[in-house]
Length: 88
Ligand code: FES
Image 1 (spheres, protein in one colour):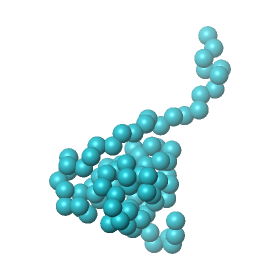
Image 2 (cartoon, rainbow, N blue to C red):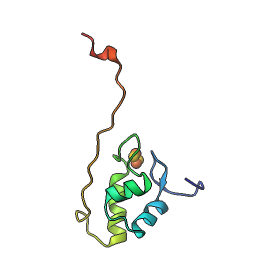
Image 3 (cartoon, rainbow, N blue to C red):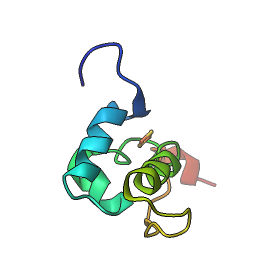
C-alpha cells in the first residue's frame, strides 16, 4: 500500500505490480509463493481477478512460456448465507 501512482494487480488486497515483481525477484517462483509473500490472491475474490495477471508476471520475470508456471489452487469465493435460506 502506498502512493496513488501504483498499479494494483490485486485490487482486493491492494498489492501493487512493484510488490509482486519484488517478490519474484526475491525468489517467489509460483503463484502460491507470490500469494504467501504479498497476499495477492487472498482477497474476497480469491484470486479470480489477479491470478492470471500474477501468472503473466511470473512468465515475464522468469522467462517462462504460458503454461510453464505451476498451476495454482484456489478456493471459490464464499458468501455469507442466512439460515432462513435453508428453511422450506
Ligand atoms: S484481486 Fe486479488 S484476490 Fe481479488
